[in-house]
Image (tube, rainbow, N blue to C red):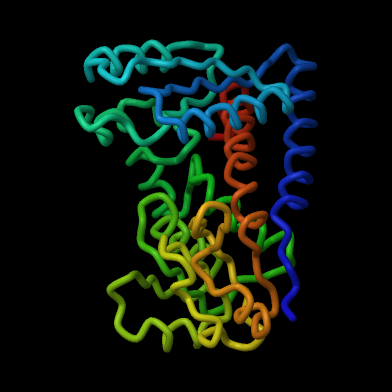
Length: 286
């Protein structure tokens, strides 16, 4: 059976390190700050913002929430973001997605200062990531990289399949693996013979958004499997994008769902906020 890569345990260790960094900053009179912008009353978004607020409080990070009506005009939202860009208390800005249909999501994300873009979504930060000189790394791929590091998985020379081509996970994940000297194949739901490609991989990172689409029989014996997906079956059961039971009998190491990648995303958001605060007061770090 595969070794379980425990995201909760790894996340707890990194959060402790983040808290220590925050305490060191506090000794210099510096409090890292995050501004969260929530538009509308989507229940899922509300839960995510609350989770981030709780995580910031536990780490000693200032959390400044802006909750706006769903019918707010795009220009009004952009004006608010410009105010936050100038707010010296704030090191990171989080735009909680999704936004209402009448708002241009890309325009809003691009209005965030690249130097406060702790989600790593701004084209400036995407470009720096592609060039191998990142300012902010997107939180979920960054968390996956940390999980691999903490589990002793070296990507140098490895064959890595990233299944999923989203701007949030798949594409940046592929670039981050390339930067570690992996040979990367980026697949997606239209890839022909997906199973054959996955079966040749030393590391599989599944982010397709389809329940158990990656079959356990496809996994190369001894491979490392990172399952980014979280899909609800029925009212209670949560499963990933990988057929866990079958895959765990072949893999060398695997993440569970839940309790794998999920806890790492907010943890790396905290890490990015602290990095931003350190950079703001030590500009040579940029």
